[in-house]
Length: 172
Image 1 (tube, one colour):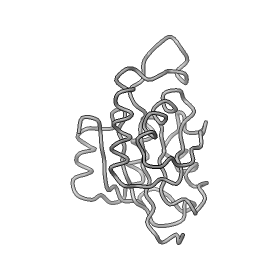
Image 2 (tube, rainbow, N blue to C red; image 1 turned 30 degrees about the vertical axis):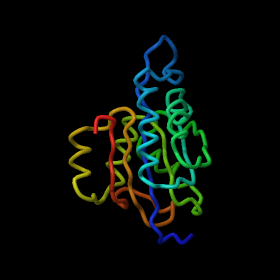
Image 3 (spheres, rainbow, N blue to C red; image 1 turned 60 degrees about the vertical axis):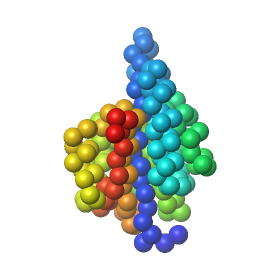
């Protein structure tokens, strides 16, 4: 693929987690999270984006979110479980994305806040329609995703180079 063709980056926050007496990394989804994750997966399927790659945090709640969401997609992308996505800052997330092979056109990253919302804000130099207003009004609750477009090599991904084109939250 040419690096001039637009790429789609979907930043997906895990669904609602429970608070049992376990380490934070091992927290499972709450009942609401198990209901919201497939709904988010259906909304991702409705977007028509064919994902080449999914990068998913190794935390239990992100793995469970992705397992439920991906079942709703027409085809399963290759999934890589990445330790560095857990508790990552926007800069650390960009560093991981910079390692993506250029034959990957569309990617979904399943992670955590505040990193996922921060990365959305950092990457989005432009916004289409009312997407930014909706995101600013709602924030980035659990099971929410933002869709950005970007033209260029993954190695050149940096703050301000993408366009925020869509946003969905369970209450939308």
